[in-house]
Length: 463
View 1 (spheres, one colour):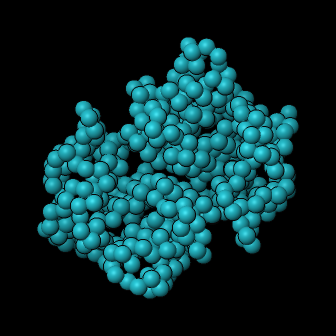
View 2 (view 1 turned 90 degrees about the horizontal axis):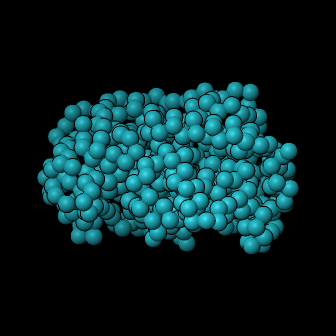
View 3 (view 1 turned 30 degrees about the horizontal axis):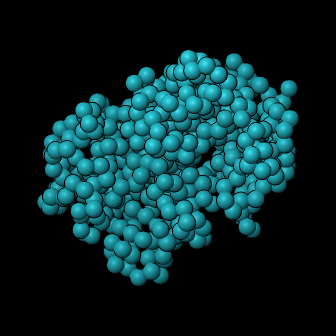
């Protein structure tokens, strides 16, 4: 019995073709892994499989879920047709996590779809938490108290708790370290064996190889079956930089949230043109450290100096030169853009506001840099760009400030292997050319050849 059938699906954003005559079928217990370069249409396909589309995108063709047609339905009709039948894990976990509610009670509320008693709902919610690889103590936390990887798994738990017959997973392993990627891969394989149909949209070639299912690639807006998983692609790495004096000096940096210590007594020095990789398991404190350097999360103790000048702990207390000096690329690139403004102007803002360029000159620099990264925003709003395109836009926006220190927090999680290598090549070369101290927070092994030094965080400490 087919649980998901897509026939002749096309998607357009105005005159731009996003998907062209895509067809696929999924049966219970089968997995289909869809690969494709950033911007190929994977996220659009994942949303269409649930009967939805981003603003400005029109769908045509047919999407049938467990016998029910999904396209051209009202919102209430769509909810009735899909509730408990399909679960969708978006690329950015913030889209499904309620920022003002604790995670556990939200899971229990979602479990009410299949369980009527309070005890059964709580048991189902705790089971989903465990199935997503999360510790019981995270039950009482708010989403902002979770690391990026923990948010990813918590979003997965909200999907699993409804026990859907079809799971649509958009980059389910992004933001996870190698160990947790392996755990999640094993859990997805188990779900498939138990009868859940999986539609997985990913750049993770290891995940594609590990699952016993079909593999296809979105190429030129069409879905093309693959006999084997494509090989990894890596670009040449740039030459190592020459040693120089420190640009960034951090001493005794500590960040606490209530009684919890997130970062503890960190000392760090980064030289101009250096490329330093920061690794560690999800929840180790990497993002908190990066945000503290940028003044987005206030340190409890310690000092941050750039070129010998001590920076205020909070970004709002830093002057324009100090804001320009440390730029931070957010892990959640979509949330870092204003959904109601064109992306090109937002990318150009740092050159205009922090470097004093005129609007047209800033837009020209932004267009040229985005072109080097393979992105043409064409004055589109963020909702019309893929996650991978927005990640590259976020990197370009930070680089246009010409900072002294650039912190990139998982900037390649939504990119395919070729574009990951292309991004790292561009960022590291640009950093070297302009003497930028680069801190690369990443689980991406593609980044390792571009780094000239590596630190590991564990339990909030730097090793």
